[in-house]
Image 1 (cartoon, rainbow, N blue to C red):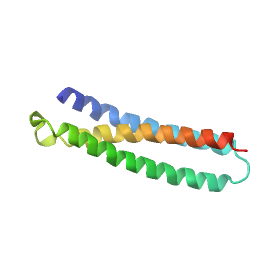
Image 2 (cartoon, one colour; image 1 turned 30 degrees about the horizontal axis):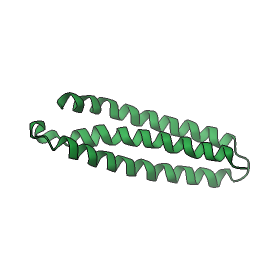
Image 3 (cartoon, one colour; image 1 turned 120 degrees about the vertical axis):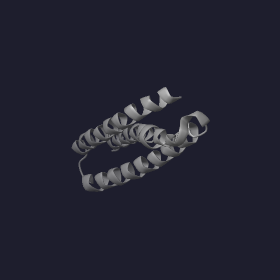
Image 4 (cartoon, rainbow, N blue to C red; image 1 turned 90 degrees about the vertical axis):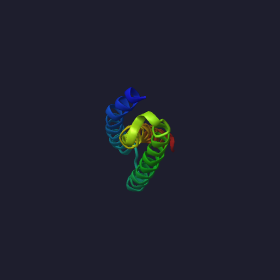
Length: 110
């Protein structure tokens, strides 16, 4: 379990950073393909990304803390796996999926 904790703590922030980069790149791509209503779409996109990212971060952190702190061998640092591992991991994945779906929906709109 300690190996998984160390791996998540290393991979989680990287995935969050990649999710933020993908969200920004897809926002630029989505804005470039829109005509009228660009500012309104961008406002909804940014607000939706913030809500999805924060919600996924809290859910991922809570699930990670629950999983890692259920083992008695993890010690008093068991919460780090959720806060720095699974929380950012889930937030990065959720941000990338949300951005992709928003841009895909914007491109298919008439």
